[in-house]
Image 1 (cartoon, helix red, strand yellow):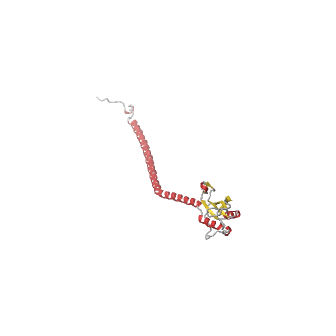
Image 2 (tube, one colour):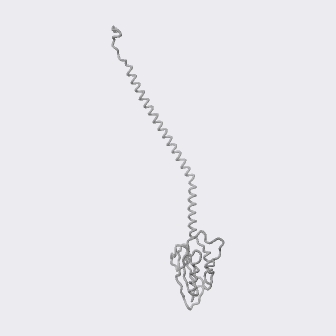
Image 3 (cartoon, helix red, strand yellow):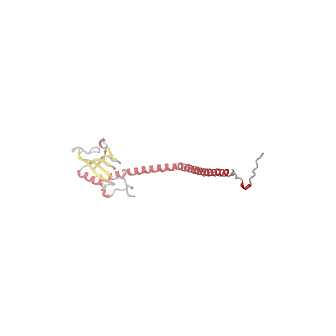
Length: 223
């Protein structure tokens, strides 16, 4: 038999509603889920942004690598050009107008004298008498020949000093070999045998003025 409450409605004891707590729990769970969803969205956006940046950086690196590879040929060409220019400059500093030297020697050598040997070197290293010797840091010529008088040797040294690019003229020897011997093309005999070294300055942009092929008159032109 079902019990019946005979008390008036106003005096009855109210029972707490069980649905209130459930609502709060549901709201709490929804809040947590919403927060987790927001955190996931933010994290996913950061990952996507960083992945896009990494992809862009990788693409830029590939582009720059391809560009560097395409410019490699031009870089090699520039290096080859620089090497060739340096080689030409070095050769230019070591050049010497030997033709002009021979022409001037023919002009300045006294008419009664001649050369036994003439040795020349751009670096200044000579092998006089078979022994290598560095005479100077620049071009040098070693002249050995014959002249009838000592004054002719002095005159020759003066003329040599006036030649193109000559910096110094040094006399190593001037002596009579055989006072009774006859001079010849191979031996000075009773003539003075001279040994002179002629040192030249370094190369200049122009060996001689344009249009001037003759030795200047100050060189004497022989005697």
